[in-house]
Length: 105
Image 1 (cartoon, rainbow, N blue to C red):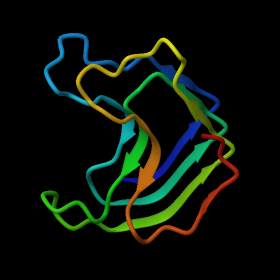
Image 2: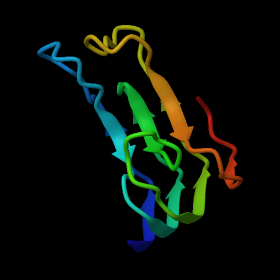
Image 3: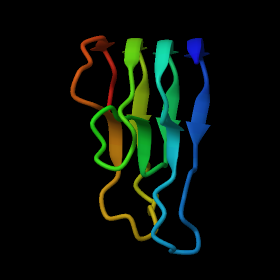
């Protein structure tokens, strides 16, 4: 896809309620994209808030271009339990990004 804008949202409460080992992500990109802006959103209570791999060993190689992630807040509340996934993460991107600025995790 191309030219996506995700701005001003509150995205929250993604859980694994049945303990199946799932780790729900708030935003996950699994295909090539050119032009993605994730700006001024609030993410909370998810095992991973933003996941954009380009270096995942089992996914096909992707072309990720013109991605901006800025001004977001990502956290988990103290009573949040992510099911069986052992370590919640905030923002994960692959190895070739340089436009990720001023986010709070």
